[in-house]
Length: 112
Image (cartoon, rainbow, N blue to C red):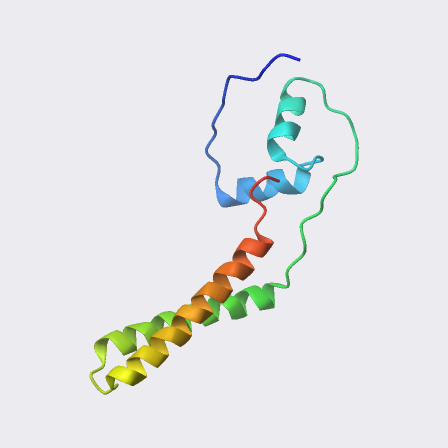
């Protein structure tokens, strides 16, 4: 089999990317686009489906992020917190940030 050495990059809007992922019939978007462009398209069911996420949940998570930003800003600007309170709040905010990042990483699908 010949080694692939050429690369093509395209820019997409978020909506265009979502539409391609919805139409993708393989587990990897690049493989599907290659087969489609070269006329080697074969109809087969998609190997992996992306989970459907409730939009209400996405709004709640977005709201949490906004609230965390407001708390961090208040903590940074307000002199009313003692040093130990600041450390505790920073520890909680950092922990929440790590947990949200882990959730994002768990549900991200970069190679679809």
